[in-house]
Length: 148
Length: 148
DNA sequence: TTGCGGATTAGACTCATTCTAACTGATTGA
DNA sequence: TCAATCAGTTAGAATGAGTCTAATCCGCAA
Image (cartoon, each protein chain N blue to C red):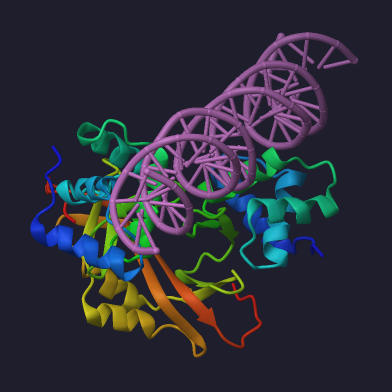
């Protein structure tokens, strides 16, 4: 079930869109609330299906557009695993991803600053990186939480 | 220009294929030597084009098959970046990848064991990972080497 | 109220990858 | 020696995530 946006989330959305000169639309609100309602790193298709419950006329292209918009204005992160469909994640804190081999589920793993620092330190001189992607593949026992 | 396999490399190939019950073929030798000749993380298409210089009849499907075979018997690693074409890398030592935003070139970054350890240590209890993928995105100045 | 520009839409298109089914060629064993 | 077998190869078709296109929609400002 999609929860509608809290006042705070709506503000967050509006602020980020305005900052990059884009508008708040009901489609964007709907897609954004899908991402916030169940933080399980859905694919475009999953977002599409969930969003249509609230907004039956919504088109797949729009979901692609909305998600791309969110990524470009820094509201949401893309998560890629091998060549599987791209997944989307509204957690902006620095974190790695853990992909459960068995369930396919993706968990967020908090990334302490000192680990980020030690990673940056392995870069030879002259290499300057803005983005570091870290993903684990393995098994997660117990833990039914979908994490975020 | 594709160099033909050294005696050692040919043995390496044979050993790995035999271990998983598969055969050495001239196609596999050709594709393997393409990977070793220029360690620049080529895409399937690049491998295909280079390999055809030495073996004009070679088909794309075979290149896919060979590379898949090498991956499955642990001779070669796949490198994925966002949703771009998969690249292939015959460096089996633990390493991260650095993708140059400007040139698109991929460099290998050595991964010291203590960094791997510190990464593993951020996993909560119950999470067990076999594979860790680390990729940097940024700019590499100077350094014309294609690294491996 | 009209016009403008951004957003949305359906459907066509792309292109990496996978699948399929036929063929090849080496090996086995009768 | 010949046929059977079987892994590997091949061309081309199929798949499917994602992108593009061109038409339409909608909200706002003149």
